[in-house]
Image (cartoon, rainbow, N blue to C red):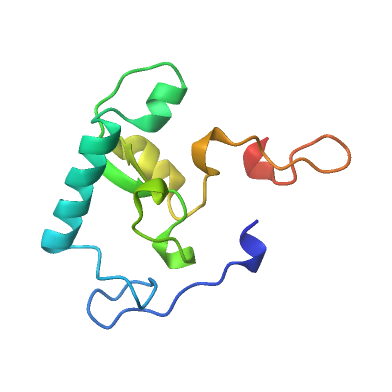
Length: 114
């Protein structure tokens, strides 16, 4: 899945890769977007909920990382606890609990879905 995705150019302001059409992910812009996500999706970690646990979200994560071309749209953002956000890193998780892509042999096509 990530084979066709390319890293974005590094921003001169924040020194991180992201789409040039997106503002830097810090300061007032980040606080505003995070608050919108918390209002829309709650303040509980989405990954913990999928696992049947309850843990407060302390971060907002991009399902498809900005460095891989993901945007700041609500559908690409989810509240996560610090543990799950740092475990995920810049890898892409399939949004909305879609099943893992399956190869012809019935196995997930990537090690990370096994």
